[in-house]
Structure formats: structure tokens, C-alpha cells
Length: 90
Image (tube, rainbow, N blue to C red; front, side):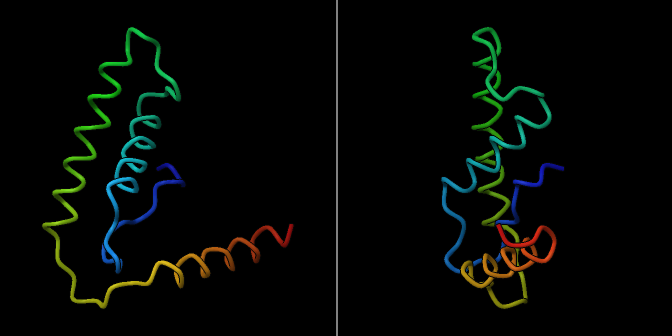
């Protein structure tokens, strides 16, 4: 799947509408093959992004976890460290 789509579940604070929309946009871009759809496909593309964002929001509200919520800053630092180990410092 698309590497830029990140897990949005079980964070404190919860995922924002912007984060959910961005993940939905990346998903639709990946499966459609379009980064910027043509005028003829723009309506279908936008509708798909909005529907997936709405369903994603409902999913995130409905699922439960026994694990403690993750901290965004700590997870970002871990990801940065993994990147440095994989690609080196730039």
C-alpha cells in the first residue's frame, strides 16, 4: 500500500479531520492512478475521497483498543530514527 498513509488509530490527541482527509486522498490517488484527475474524472475522484474520509472517521470512532494511546511526538521521533538508520543523515 501507499507508504505515506499512516496509522491514525489510538493516538492522543485523536486523528484530525485533515489527517483523515490526507490519508483518504492518498488512498484514492493510489488506487486510481491519478495525482490530479482530469476535469472529466474530478467529480468521481472528489466524491471518492470524501466518502472514504467519512467512513474512515466512523471507523476510527467505532474501534476500541486496550493499549494505551500513542504519543505523536514519540512516534515521529521513532520514525525519524528508523529513517536515519535506513538512509543515513542528510
